Structure formats: C-alpha cells, structure tokens
Amino acid sequence: LRNNSHGLKFKDGAAKIEANSVCPEDWQDFSDANILKAERERQSSVELRTLIDGILQQTSNDMRKQCSDVNVAFNKRISETKDTKSKLEDHLNKIVGQIKEAEENISRLKKAIDDKVLPMQLAQTRLDTRTNRPNVELCRDPVQYRLIEEVGEIESSVAQLQARLKQTEDSLKGLIRNQLALEEDIGVKANTLFIDEVECMGMRKSINIQNF
Image (cartoon, rainbow, N blue to C red):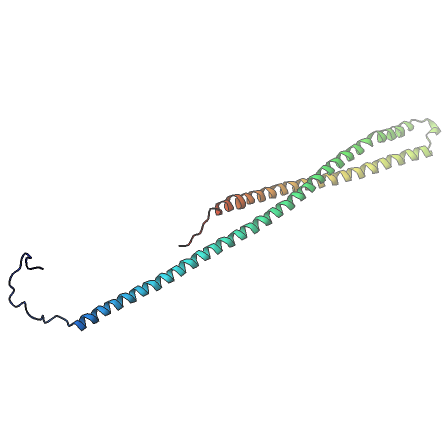
C-alpha cells in the first residue's frame, strides 16, 4: 500500500496486538518444523525411489537371466533333436539298403526255385517213363535208385529255398515296418525343429528387455 493507494481510511482499534498472534520465535519454530517435515518427506521419497529403482533393476536382471536360461534350454533341446534326427536318418538309410538287399535276395530265391522246376519235371518224367519197361526190364537198377534220389534232393533243395524265401519275406515286412516308423519319427523331429528353431526362437529374437 502507498499513500495514494485506493481505499485508504481510518480503522479504529487497528493499532493493537491480536490475541491469537504468535511471537517471532514461535513463527520460526513452526517454519523450521515445516521445513524439517518437508525434508523428511523428501528424504523418504528419495529412499523409496532408490528402493523402487533397485527392485526394477533386479526385475530386469531376473527377466534377462530367465530369457537367457530359456534360450540355452531351447538351443540344447534343438541340438539334441538335430542329433537324434541325424541318427534316425542314418539308420533309415541302412534300413533302405537292407530292404533293397532283401528284395534282391527274394528275386534270386524265386529264380532258384523256378530253376528247380524243369530238373524236377525231367527226373519225374524219367521215372514215370521207366515204369513202362516190359517184363524183367522193369528192374530196380542203380539208375532207378539214382533218379529217386535225385527227386528227393531236388524236393529237399526246393523246401530249403522256400523256407529261406518265407524267412526273407518276413524279414522284408519287418524292415518295411521299421522304415515307416523311422520316416514317421523323422517327420515328427523335423516338425519339432521347425516349431522350436524357426517359430519359437524366431519370435524370441524380438525380445528386448530394457531397464524400467
């Protein structure tokens, strides 16, 4: 206010000390108390911020470690799956080779059996023809016994070949079943690798954990 300020007028009783007024010491104490309280609040806020920063930093570190651990587990599993798939493929190649060999053996056995047909027919025809010998010429001579022995040898050989043929055919069926099982397992492993290595690890490359 100045001497020329608007609204100046006399105020009766203005020159007095108000009963509820405080002395300068009380005013200073009150102000100091407010300052001290504000400082405590500020310090508490700083400590809380430090605590929160520590928690957030620890959270970031934990998340990075967890992400790293998951990546290590993924890579380990992918490596194991690749190794197993490679072993299965090697075994499949061996099975395919054995199947080819078995098929070749079956063809050879069938041909060997077929090759016995004409000798058997010839021996039996000779025996049958010799039954037409007249009178005392129908003799149980060494030729007769040798022809009978020849028929027996051919029959025995054919029986052995047929037994080996069945054994080889049964083995081939087992090999084919193994081939199908291996191909299915390899397909499963390939699908697993696609999911883990391409899809999952591909998505995980975009993970970027920053400090809060």
